[in-house]
Image 1: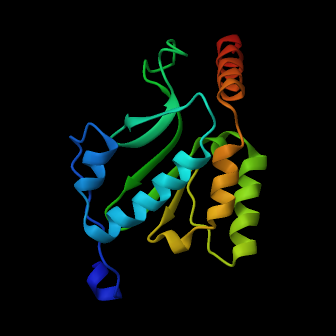
Image 2: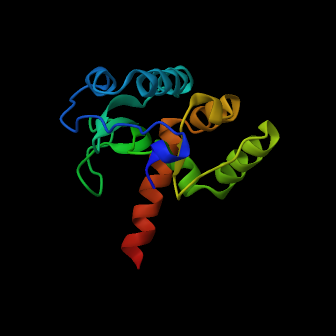
Length: 164
């Protein structure tokens, strides 16, 4: 279905060649850029020490830099969160919610308490505007896992996988 038929504005995908978050945002339509800028600011404000903002997987990403954890399963910084404009919505990837049922429950409760609908895949929350998000809950989830704890959980999971 065409978004114009539903009264919704289509979100235009950013250029995949962006090398910085600023370039990524600059390649978006005004409304999408404003929305993602607000969410980016929220993540940056609440991001625990030890993570770094970068471009990853064609989107704005936050993760553990290779200088701190050089050996990852794919040779890329260990991803903690991501933010992307998709064709018909935006996505906020929260890997903590993917790996921890308590974090997922926290998100579900936060959306319910705020009277907002949670549209979530395994780790990504789909939204159109910043008003679709319970910002206090998003901030709590982003702030909840220190980098050292995240690294330990990752390393433990890799050891478990190697045992199988």
